[in-house]
Image (tube, rainbow, N blue to C red):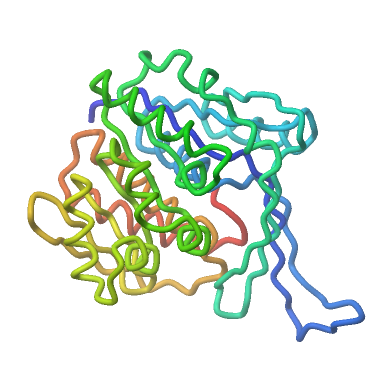
Length: 292
């Protein structure tokens, strides 16, 4: 495998993951499992890339606080090099409520992430072989121009590029047309099935994936317990998910995307990359909180 130097640009987040273990008592105490962990979908992807042998630098904006210290130290322990812009706002926080089906609803304060500066990200871009940008930067008015500029500059320098959609609600608010315009220089796209349908403006996933393949060289779509689809070179490939009891789906798609990307960047075949993606996703859903 050929190791690549990868730059991941994304959100610095602290995750507070709550999984009630009894029916909610609206005006009283409800027993729950609670974890406070390093969050950020692109950080999970970065960690997975390291596990596939790549040299990864993570760039984002954070506050000067304990949450930022936790985020950075967790990445360092996983082998990722963090390069954080210290902003005036506090580090972003997500409170994720996990239900009995392991699905989650998220309450998000992006905090310092909205202050990420274009110049800070572009500094040293020539040191890398591949650039991955979090879709959260595209979805936020404050950072969309940063995402667009980084992808454009990477393409100009001949670097390979990738992007994940990240979240369907802000995608609807932004509109698919504006997302596609901002991501015109991304060559790989990662999405879940719901995000792919909304981005393509379709109700049939097969039609949606084929439509998105006109914008991106490879379109990787996770389908939960149904596995994943990949459209590349005019063909759709599919892989089945492992039969695993899910505890929390947080970060499963990000781990799958990171494993797929890590395998492909290392010269792996589509078949091998898809299998690596399902292996990573299965590991992720066994634990509460994002995989580290």
